[in-house]
Image (cartoon, rainbow, N blue to C red; front, side):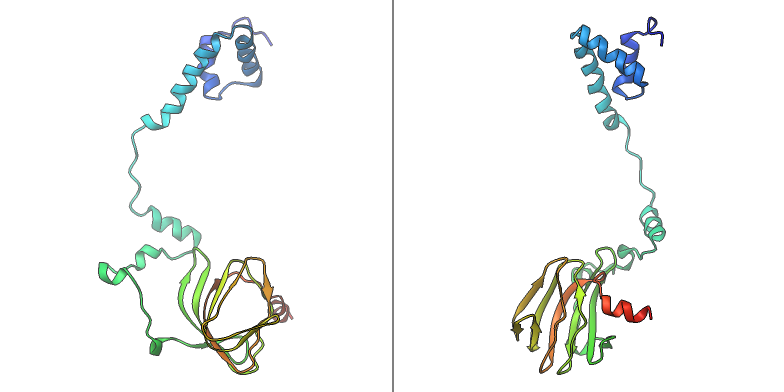
Amino acid sequence: MVTENYCFCELAPLYALDLLSEVERSWVEQQIAECPDLAEELTAYQSEVTAIPYSVPALPMAADLKDRLFGQLGLDNPSSERCPDPIVESYRAVRLQDLDWIAHTTTGVAIAIVHRDEIKRELVGFLRAEPGVHYPFHRHAAIEEIFMLEGDLVIGDEVYGTGDYIRSQPGSSHAPYTTGGCCFFFHTSMDDEYPELNAMSSC
Protein backbone atom coordinates (compact mmCIF):
# COMPACT_ATOMS: atom_id res chain seq x y z
CA MET A 1 0.00 0.00 0.00
CA VAL A 2 1.45 3.37 -1.05
CA THR A 3 1.44 5.80 1.86
CA GLU A 4 3.59 8.61 0.41
CA ASN A 5 0.51 10.72 -0.30
CA TYR A 6 -0.88 10.40 3.23
CA CYS A 7 -1.15 13.63 5.18
CA PHE A 8 -1.48 13.60 8.96
CA CYS A 9 -3.56 16.77 9.05
CA GLU A 10 -6.11 15.17 6.71
CA LEU A 11 -6.20 11.74 8.33
CA ALA A 12 -6.17 12.83 11.99
CA PRO A 13 -9.79 14.13 11.98
CA LEU A 14 -10.94 10.92 10.28
CA TYR A 15 -8.99 8.90 12.86
CA ALA A 16 -10.84 10.72 15.63
CA LEU A 17 -14.14 9.85 13.91
CA ASP A 18 -13.03 6.20 13.53
CA LEU A 19 -13.48 6.34 9.75
CA LEU A 20 -10.05 5.09 8.64
CA SER A 21 -9.04 1.74 7.26
CA GLU A 22 -6.68 -0.45 9.29
CA VAL A 23 -3.74 0.61 7.11
CA GLU A 24 -4.55 4.30 7.51
CA ARG A 25 -4.98 3.95 11.27
CA SER A 26 -1.63 2.19 11.54
CA TRP A 27 0.02 4.97 9.53
CA VAL A 28 -1.42 7.67 11.81
CA GLU A 29 -0.29 5.77 14.92
CA GLN A 30 3.17 5.31 13.43
CA GLN A 31 3.45 9.08 12.80
CA ILE A 32 2.53 9.76 16.44
CA ALA A 33 5.12 7.24 17.62
CA GLU A 34 7.78 8.94 15.53
CA CYS A 35 6.69 12.48 16.45
CA PRO A 36 4.92 12.59 19.86
CA ASP A 37 3.96 16.25 19.32
CA LEU A 38 1.35 15.05 16.82
CA ALA A 39 -0.50 13.37 19.69
CA GLU A 40 -1.59 16.80 20.94
CA GLU A 41 -3.07 17.60 17.53
CA LEU A 42 -4.96 14.29 17.49
CA THR A 43 -6.21 14.90 21.04
CA ALA A 44 -7.63 18.24 19.94
CA TYR A 45 -9.57 16.54 17.13
CA GLN A 46 -10.86 13.87 19.53
CA SER A 47 -12.09 16.58 21.92
CA GLU A 48 -14.00 18.21 19.09
CA VAL A 49 -15.56 14.90 18.13
CA THR A 50 -16.87 14.30 21.66
CA ALA A 51 -18.58 17.72 21.54
CA ILE A 52 -20.44 17.00 18.30
CA PRO A 53 -23.52 15.32 19.91
CA TYR A 54 -24.02 18.32 22.20
CA SER A 55 -23.86 20.82 19.35
CA VAL A 56 -26.68 19.16 17.42
CA PRO A 57 -30.07 20.77 18.10
CA ALA A 58 -32.49 18.53 19.98
CA LEU A 59 -35.22 17.05 17.80
CA PRO A 60 -38.77 16.96 19.16
CA MET A 61 -40.08 13.49 19.97
CA ALA A 62 -43.14 12.40 18.05
CA ALA A 63 -46.25 12.68 20.20
CA ASP A 64 -47.28 9.10 19.47
CA LEU A 65 -43.80 7.55 19.77
CA LYS A 66 -44.52 5.92 23.13
CA ASP A 67 -47.82 4.46 21.90
CA ARG A 68 -46.14 3.09 18.77
CA LEU A 69 -43.33 1.56 20.84
CA PHE A 70 -45.74 -0.20 23.19
CA GLY A 71 -47.76 -1.31 20.15
CA GLN A 72 -44.67 -2.90 18.58
CA LEU A 73 -44.04 -4.74 21.86
CA GLY A 74 -47.66 -5.87 22.03
CA LEU A 75 -48.20 -4.13 25.38
CA ASP A 76 -50.71 -1.63 26.70
CA ASN A 77 -49.30 1.83 27.35
CA PRO A 78 -49.63 2.34 31.13
CA SER A 79 -49.84 6.11 30.72
CA SER A 80 -52.93 5.77 28.51
CA GLU A 81 -54.80 4.17 31.40
CA ARG A 82 -54.19 7.01 33.80
CA CYS A 83 -57.12 9.00 35.09
CA PRO A 84 -56.79 12.74 34.38
CA ASP A 85 -57.80 13.50 37.97
CA PRO A 86 -54.47 13.95 39.87
CA ILE A 87 -56.14 13.01 43.16
CA VAL A 88 -57.32 9.66 41.79
CA GLU A 89 -54.08 8.76 39.99
CA SER A 90 -51.92 9.32 43.08
CA TYR A 91 -53.04 5.98 44.54
CA ARG A 92 -55.33 3.01 43.95
CA ALA A 93 -57.38 1.25 46.60
CA VAL A 94 -59.29 -2.02 46.49
CA ARG A 95 -61.89 -2.72 49.18
CA LEU A 96 -62.00 -6.16 50.77
CA GLN A 97 -65.54 -6.73 49.53
CA ASP A 98 -64.46 -5.79 45.98
CA LEU A 99 -61.73 -8.43 45.66
CA ASP A 100 -62.32 -10.51 42.54
CA TRP A 101 -61.57 -14.07 43.69
CA ILE A 102 -60.99 -16.59 40.92
CA ALA A 103 -60.28 -20.31 41.12
CA HIS A 104 -56.62 -21.28 40.74
CA THR A 105 -55.47 -24.29 38.72
CA THR A 106 -54.67 -25.92 42.08
CA THR A 107 -57.86 -27.35 43.61
CA GLY A 108 -58.82 -25.56 46.82
CA VAL A 109 -56.94 -22.37 45.97
CA ALA A 110 -58.39 -19.01 44.95
CA ILE A 111 -56.53 -15.82 44.12
CA ALA A 112 -57.47 -12.16 43.80
CA ILE A 113 -55.08 -10.06 41.71
CA VAL A 114 -55.02 -6.38 42.70
CA HIS A 115 -52.11 -5.25 40.50
CA ARG A 116 -50.50 -6.61 37.34
CA ASP A 117 -47.40 -5.02 35.77
CA GLU A 118 -46.63 -6.40 32.31
CA ILE A 119 -43.42 -4.35 32.05
CA LYS A 120 -41.89 -5.51 35.34
CA ARG A 121 -43.63 -8.91 35.03
CA GLU A 122 -45.04 -8.58 38.55
CA LEU A 123 -48.24 -9.81 40.19
CA VAL A 124 -49.65 -8.49 43.46
CA GLY A 125 -52.65 -10.02 45.15
CA PHE A 126 -54.14 -12.34 47.74
CA LEU A 127 -54.25 -16.12 47.92
CA ARG A 128 -56.49 -18.27 50.08
CA ALA A 129 -56.22 -22.02 50.40
CA GLU A 130 -58.48 -24.60 51.97
CA PRO A 131 -57.18 -26.99 54.67
CA GLY A 132 -54.81 -29.66 53.36
CA VAL A 133 -53.92 -27.87 50.12
CA HIS A 134 -50.46 -28.56 48.67
CA TYR A 135 -49.33 -25.79 46.33
CA PRO A 136 -47.31 -27.05 43.33
CA PHE A 137 -43.52 -27.00 43.38
CA HIS A 138 -42.28 -23.82 41.69
CA ARG A 139 -39.06 -21.89 41.05
CA HIS A 140 -38.96 -18.14 41.52
CA ALA A 141 -37.95 -15.96 38.57
CA ALA A 142 -37.68 -12.93 40.86
CA ILE A 143 -38.19 -12.05 44.51
CA GLU A 144 -41.41 -13.37 46.03
CA GLU A 145 -42.92 -11.76 49.12
CA ILE A 146 -45.66 -13.23 51.28
CA PHE A 147 -47.39 -11.64 54.27
CA MET A 148 -49.52 -14.06 56.23
CA LEU A 149 -53.00 -12.79 57.11
CA GLU A 150 -54.45 -15.91 58.72
CA GLY A 151 -53.97 -19.65 59.02
CA ASP A 152 -50.76 -21.62 58.56
CA LEU A 153 -48.31 -22.09 55.70
CA VAL A 154 -45.60 -24.74 55.80
CA ILE A 155 -42.41 -24.16 53.79
CA GLY A 156 -39.70 -26.74 54.31
CA ASP A 157 -39.47 -27.38 58.05
CA GLU A 158 -40.97 -24.03 59.07
CA VAL A 159 -44.59 -23.23 59.89
CA TYR A 160 -45.66 -19.60 59.34
CA GLY A 161 -48.74 -17.94 60.76
CA THR A 162 -50.60 -14.64 61.03
CA GLY A 163 -48.28 -11.64 60.77
CA ASP A 164 -45.28 -13.56 59.41
CA TYR A 165 -43.36 -12.22 56.41
CA ILE A 166 -41.65 -14.60 53.96
CA ARG A 167 -39.23 -13.44 51.26
CA SER A 168 -37.91 -15.88 48.67
CA GLN A 169 -34.94 -14.98 46.48
CA PRO A 170 -34.75 -15.39 42.67
CA GLY A 171 -33.82 -18.94 41.73
CA SER A 172 -35.13 -20.43 44.99
CA SER A 173 -37.87 -23.04 44.91
CA HIS A 174 -40.41 -24.68 47.22
CA ALA A 175 -43.74 -26.49 47.38
CA PRO A 176 -45.61 -24.98 50.36
CA TYR A 177 -48.72 -26.47 51.91
CA THR A 178 -51.25 -25.61 54.57
CA THR A 179 -52.67 -27.85 57.26
CA GLY A 180 -55.61 -25.79 58.48
CA GLY A 181 -56.03 -23.42 55.53
CA CYS A 182 -54.60 -19.94 55.10
CA CYS A 183 -54.86 -16.55 53.45
CA PHE A 184 -51.94 -14.32 52.55
CA PHE A 185 -50.90 -11.26 50.56
CA PHE A 186 -48.28 -11.88 47.86
CA HIS A 187 -45.99 -10.00 45.50
CA THR A 188 -44.43 -12.31 42.94
CA SER A 189 -43.25 -12.73 39.34
CA MET A 190 -45.40 -13.66 36.37
CA ASP A 191 -42.50 -15.79 35.12
CA ASP A 192 -42.18 -18.29 37.96
CA GLU A 193 -41.62 -21.84 36.69
CA TYR A 194 -43.99 -24.71 37.53
CA PRO A 195 -42.33 -27.88 36.15
CA GLU A 196 -45.12 -30.23 37.31
CA LEU A 197 -47.91 -28.10 35.80
CA ASN A 198 -45.95 -27.67 32.56
CA ALA A 199 -45.45 -31.43 32.32
CA MET A 200 -49.19 -32.02 32.84
CA SER A 201 -50.19 -29.43 30.23
CA SER A 202 -47.86 -30.99 27.64
CA CYS A 203 -49.47 -34.43 28.03
